[in-house]
Every structure is written in C-alpha cells, then in structure tokens.
Image (tube, rainbow, N blue to C red; front, top):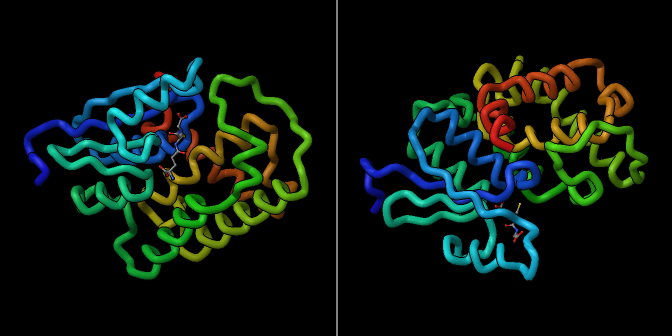
Length: 215
Ligand SMILES: N[C@@H](CCC(=O)N[C@@H](CS)C(=O)NCC(=O)O)C(=O)O
C-alpha cells in the first residue's frame, strides 16, 4: 500500500540525457506534489551506474517511482500511476476520445521513433547545430509533425489532448529538445506552422524549464 503522507521518490538518470526520466518528472511536477529526487549519473566507467540503478529498480533502468512501499518502473507506467493518484492534475484529457488519442500518441513515442532516438540522442548541454540525418530519421520526423498537427487541429490545442498540458505533451518534450539541438525545422517536414509553434510551447513550460535549470 502506498503511504499517502510520505513524499514520493523519483529515481532518474542524468538530466541532460535521460529522456525517459524527464517524462514522468515533468508529469509529477505538474501534479504539484512534493517529491524527492534521486539522481544516478549514467554512462559511468565500469558500468557502476547499472549496479546503482538496480538498487532502486528491478528493471535496471531509470526512471523508477517509489511511493511508500510501492516501486513502479517504466516511464509510461509511472505516468499512468500519477494520473490515477492525482486525478485533478489533468494529466490525461477528460474527454474520452481525446484521452484515447493522447494515450496513443504517448504509446507511439514510448515504442517508436527508433531512428530519431538513435541518431539524435537528447543532449541538453549541446550547442544547436545542423545535422545531416538519415532518411529513416526524416520519416520519423515527418510522422511526428503529422501527429502533432493532427491532434492540435482535432482537439483545438494548445496541447495534444486539447486545453490541458498532459502526459502526451511530456512524452514529446524530449523530441522538441532534439529538434532544437539538431537543427530540425518542422517546416521542412510538412508543418504549416502549428507543429513548430507547439515545439516552442513545450520548451517554454515551467516544468521543462525547472528540469533544464538543473541539467
Ligand atoms: N522503457 C523504459 C526505458 C528506460 C531506459 O531505457 N532508461 C535508460 C536511461 S534513459 C537506462 O536506465 N539505462 C541504463 C543505464 O544507462 O545504465 C521506460 O520507458 O522507462
């Protein structure tokens, strides 16, 4: 059983690199709940980070959320848990159809876009530069731009599920950082302006700015 009065603990990896850590951290920040953060530096010599993570997370991966005596691994499962634990935080749209599309968008990010993820790793400390990207990464970017445009139009924006920033937006925030770092212009990938502006909005969110300030 979760202990309601105890502060939750989110175990995360290096903030400049760990996109999977960033997503539930942003969602947890949006709830307004006080929480402790345990940061495990990634990419250490001799893989000491692996053993350090295993002490917190049976999967050997960050993020992991500890709530009382409950530990949940996996970014998407943590976000779902937070949405249920904080039903007033608006982490999923209230409209059933918008919620289904927002969930599908988050799931597509969680399981897809392997080329973009591999070729354009998040690096919040990197100077923006124009990168030559493969056709597979171009396909990923075109799909993301089409997905963003479609949801913004369908549910009226300014967020993917409509008026409230939520989990789907948290899931695409690292993509917005990649677009900036690797000089990706949404307009070159089928944007009419809406996706580019959405990426800018993601990077202006207070939750993201709080993460960035400590990266
Ligand atoms: N599907 C998992 C992926 C988690 C994952 O790959 N985490 C990476 C860091 S972003 C990790 O813990 N790697 C182990 C390491 O670098 O030692 C999730 O969504 O949480």
